Image 1 (cartoon, rainbow, N blue to C red):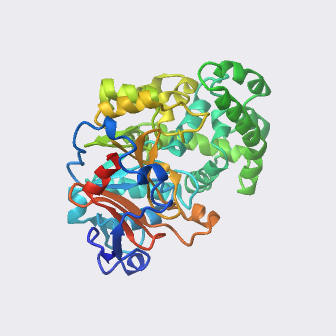
Image 2 (cartoon, rainbow, N blue to C red):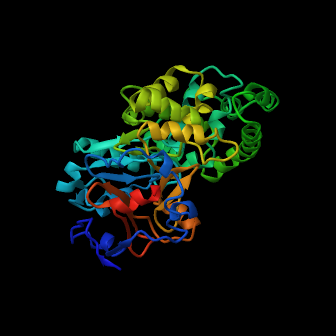
Image 3 (spheres, one colour):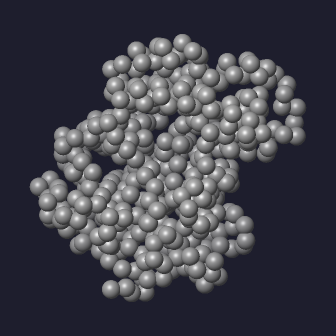
Length: 440
């Protein structure tokens, strides 16, 4: 039975946003687009692991994931969740509502790539911090790909790291173009930038890499993972320069933009230095664990033994001090990369038991985009809420969806789990007792 939407208070002046949102709620559907088969088979999934009552976050949580450089979609989603209101037209023209001041906004990663504007999206996120909003920013694989590429360019090359720049692929090229146009175009940027051939040598892995990497990665990656990585790099090495030229960039442009990105993101006085400094790997609120992608056995046991604070410190220390290869193919990085494929580090019953003993019973994630709103799934015996609902305009065009996306996942102890998406006709509401029933 449908009812007027009770969870979101959106001001009437946001008529363009309201027109694209559902105005009614309904109990969380049990169709395949909203739940998977295991989640529908209540009482037969993970009940034997649950010893305590499911604990909800102490304050309301608004989870928005994978904005992918679309500031308009991100800000519209904040409005849809009722946590901000626009004060004027344009970006970064908003302030917190009463609901926004008492809620926590968790950004589930993948702020970068795709477009239309990486830098605008970052400035919108920064504006939330400027307003003293409670913001938790999680690491996404697209976000980490940029810093890995920049660090690989800055550090001495070896077999483990020399592929990380080109590994970023064509999706990072719009960022380099933005940076070039906004910071370098009207300067003497060519000074001290080497030739096209020299830039190619600096940016690309050597021919020797393809021979040596499988031996270098043996024992750390699964055999499927090694094969997938080499195959991916063959493809990206052949296409990267062509994609740069299609965007109007030479390798000299890209190299210059990369050096500017190092200043912006890695230097303490850089405009976006805050982005990686504030980033966390995971956040636990009640029985809910928020992350970008998923878990494996090692991370499950780490969370049980040491907790999320330790995991977040390990994330930053590994990124800063560990060799890039060892970091990117570790369990820490698997947390923002995994899709539970054979090539990923495994999550088995052993890891799930550790996660449950750590008091974690629901994982809230991005990374896997959904075209019909959020979905509740049971993966490897662990409940996941898939909350990447395809916000950025470029991805939506590729998927046959109109305009920019709008939506958010709301979690609070009074109303339960609420999925709002402009691509689903009603808000999906799972009351607290209904979510507990997934465990039987």
